[in-house]
Length: 500
Image 1 (cartoon, rainbow, N blue to C red):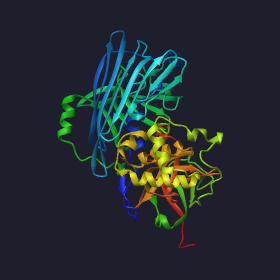
Image 2: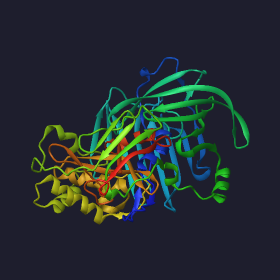
Image 3: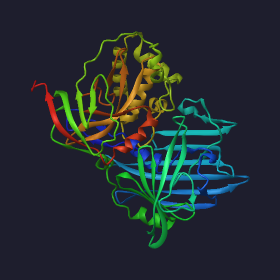
Image 4: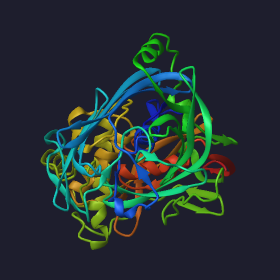
């Protein structure tokens, strides 16, 4: 899921970005199921899947317009199977067409248990790559040198299954209407298992490329995403319908070529993810308190914290926070803060170049609040504001020196953790014009409580029109999917400085 840019109507005149990771994971974290399903003994005995050599092409549309294509292959290589998926996408971000390519290849055994894999995501600006292999009961994840290098080992009971990039986690066959299938999915980013639930809704006819084909319509629920898919009797994807008007349809090279020649202008991502607002707001710099009603769902776990935001009974209240006094000296040694200091796949705070840059920025400063200001300002001043449809890691951002809100937040978090300043990423909304737009920023630890900072907008603290929907590193941002296309806000009260 990735970002959307919009020119602010306020004095701040750089693009305000949406949490592009959200849109990116709509396409490549939920429909594409780049996860690892656990060993077959955890599946029901009635669930069947079949392995066969396949070579499928897919047409991908966004808002009815051609957005790209994918090729998904499965073939034998000696004693094992090779699964290879290659996707080429384009996004309209603030009037600029941005390319994105995802290439994944895996080797699996006869039972589709993982032997090795590689994944590369490239947008022309940011490139993310990861490799992995099984060694006994460990899944070994290799981090490329350009992203800082290193190895991460995850202990698992048995070699996991890896799903295809397009379609269900497994090529399910022998389906029955009303059947509900629970498939354990292992996520190497988080190092834990989550269940995917497949519900068979009906047997129906589907028109594909001018031909009617019998299909199974299923609903796939994984974490916060609900997807509708049509699959054939071999368990292969025919059509997938995602949020934001995104569809994936099995096709062929001729039809794809014709769509490329006749493509219409892609809709801007911002138009697909705008959160509509009932009521008006004063300028963020004047706002002291904002109270809004959250419309569209009652099950959302929107955070309440002790420094700026409260959420209860569908009512959200955000106050302009006071910057706290620091109660410790860097580096932080509080054991409760360990996870907010630890490096991760995307927040490479342990990379030598990130460590050295952080030391240069902070110098001899030991006050965490003052250090946060130095880091926040440095990231704002040294990164070019460019929409970037890819998953950012801090070291690559530091080298490239450009990106949108996600790149700014990831780099600020890494630099802060590198000097022992606990930091977490906040994902949510920011107000601009007549609506709210998805955005990412950070919070820093002062010793008794957190305080917010927005390195893209060069704010400490972030204003009351920053609405936090979740906290967590990049791999957690898929949970924003539950809000897309459903969330609306209504102003109940807006107190400004002038109104007292």
